[in-house]
Figure 1 (cartoon, rainbow, N blue to C red):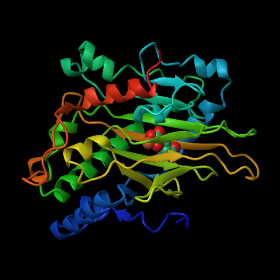
Figure 2 (cartoon, rainbow, N blue to C red; figure 1 turned 90 degrees about the vertical axis):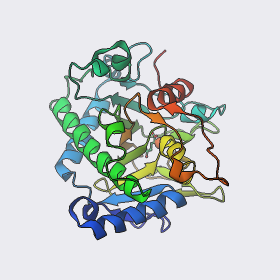
Figure 3 (tube, protein in one colour; figure 1 turned 60 degrees about the vertical axis):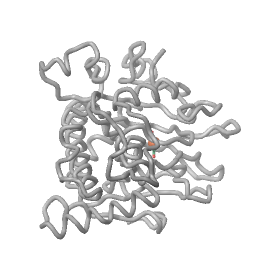
Length: 333
Ligand SMILES: O=C(O)CCC(=O)C(=O)O
Ligand SMILES: [Fe+2]
């Protein structure tokens, strides 16, 4: 594994949780509890997603971003929507924290939940807003299949992680199951184009932010100018891992559920160094795990006490997501 994983980011093998006995599960859950209280970032191995599924999602994404701009723009998000293509300069993640900033140096393609049936949860106007139909790029052969398989695989990993989180928090293993069984998660490919001229002052590939949902899983390719995680003292730790390992981080909703016992840690994507040789293009694939839109999020009683009153008012997964997406200009207007 790459030497650039800072030693403060623990590597956790998920397999003993999924396949192991009670003791194995508890040991993995304890590791998550420690890591989520501490930095809020983990490298997850043993996640069970076949490498060819990860590679196919990366390959088809790269082919999409290689299409000419007119073709990419045919898949632009509809007005008010967040799925489909968003071009360079469309959004700025620092805005989600009310920071004045310049837009991010990235372009994106996003799909929402793919598997839906005729239950009103999915077919109602609200359901369709959270889970719009994907517009698959037909120019890239195999795109829809590769992304569908990737989405389903990532959703399975996230479900196991949420079970590990439940055990970590001394809750029944299935505590979160009925809050995430119709999750409104997204898969998003991010292309950070080669930078041939220096960025504007304060302009980054992705501005500092926290993620909005329960947890995020990330697969990245190895390129200069990448993910950085903020330490307690304000300094930034660079994180580079092979594409087959996932970086997992705690999102806002897990922080709210745990009354800030766990941390939704600030992170950003840095520009390549000015002396980087060759192409500095970078691609990442992100699975933003977001509970069912109507799942209520209130600090768990086990994370509150007389000296630890609830820090957050009740919200729902859907309300929090749209509040953040509106601020960050994730919605096409
Ligand atoms: O591309 C990356 O490494 C991270 C992107 C990210 O943090 C985000 O889009 O929320
Ligand atoms: Fe993020």
